[in-house]
Structures are given as structure tokens and as C-alpha cells.
Image (cartoon, each protein chain N blue to C red):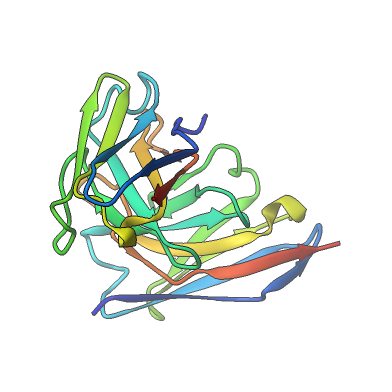
Length: 121
Length: 110
């Protein structure tokens, strides 16, 4: 059974870089059938797509975050990662990693449980 | 890119049907049949309910159905049950190959 697990610091200082890793088990991130992505949700607010990546290197980012975001993959560890630089309090959110089928790369069919990241001043 | 527009809240009684709308533009919902819907219970990760406008993943109840007309997509829940009370989000692919979510709709089962 596919499982995705987010990990990383739960507290990040303002102006620093947020770094999270998603470990995938029960499936391969090198699969030619799926993209892998990140979504976040500020407390009490809605979902925001951050970006999606294919193992070949194709990456798409939310234009509003593009200047600060990097998504990468480590196929040897079956993990993909998110880095968000110059964080502010507005980046405080639950961060989810998820899988997107390649058929349209437009929906997330499996999600991690999410991890709360708080940006402190 | 602007978020898709959903009503903040909807409500219905058990056994009734409700519909949640999701309005986009000719750069997202209006141009692609790539609308998806998610259900999120408090403290939980979102769950995929509908993809590609009207397709249900295996295991999702046929009480959930999706449709689209022009720039607006809709999620209908029939025979409402108490367990359906949750937040619902729509999403669409855009012409820029990005994804955009709706602001979310809180469903209350009276």
C-alpha cells in the first residue's frame, strides 16, 4: 500500500529556509506514471498548490511562490523534497506531499498526513 | 493565478441532496476537463472524491458526482449523511500547466 510521510523541522525562524522531505513507501518516485507534489494549508484556511515534479526533471511551480521554491528528488532514497526560502509568518501552514497520476497531472490521489510548520519571529 | 470561487458554506438535512459550485475562468475550468474535488475532515488530509470532472476513484461512494458547464464545475452529494459533514475543495489545471484550488466550502449536515 502506498504511503507518503512528510518530515522536517516544525519550527523555522523568519527569513530562513524551510526544508521538508517526503518519503514514499509502497511505490517508486521514479515511476513513469506519476508526478509528485506539495500542497500547503495555513491554519483555518484553504489549500494552496506549491508545485509538482516528474522524475525526469519536469517541474511546475505556483507562480506566487516560484521565486522562493525548489522541489527536488532523491531517487536512491525514494524521497522528494521542498525548500522554501525567506519564510515569513504567512508561510506557517500544514504542508502535505502527494501523488499525481500522469494521465492529466491535475489531481492528487494519495496524500501524506501533513506536517505543521510554524514560522517564528 | 486567482483561486477558484466556491461558496463559503452550504447545508442540508440527512437524505437531501446538495450541490457545491466552483467557478473559474476560460483559462482553467472553461478550457480543460481537469477538475477535481476533495473532502477534508477536521485534522485530516484531503481525500480525492472526483477527478477529470466526473470520475470517481475506486472506493468513493456513488452518492458523490461531478459535472461541469462552461467555467463552472459542480459537486453533488445525494442522500446526505451525517458523515459527509466536512470541508470540500475543487481544483483545476490551468493553461499555464499550474494547479489552482478553490477557497473551500464547509458542508453542515443539519
